[in-house]
Length: 109
Image (tube, rainbow, N blue to C red; front, side, top):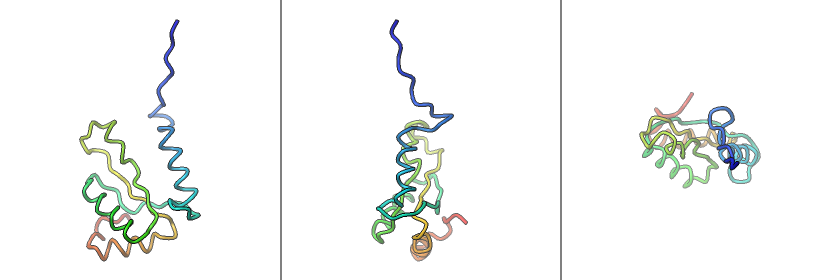
């Protein structure tokens, strides 16, 4: 009898590829820097996430956009928030950058 391979268990263990990428980001800090990642912004606004990502890239701050591909599971409705993570040692610089850009109200405490 033909048996299919089970799909990755998205409820219990998370998606294997996302977990692997997240562990890599935590281990390397995103761009080869040692340290862990800290969440600075959580939002459903994809335009805001794109703007923040552009600011962080321009400043050379290692970052990671978590849950960006979750829209596949939610049906592109936009109900699941995206999280912007930065390397721990760059957290202060990232916060100052976003405050200077007028996005301080979006920062997580």
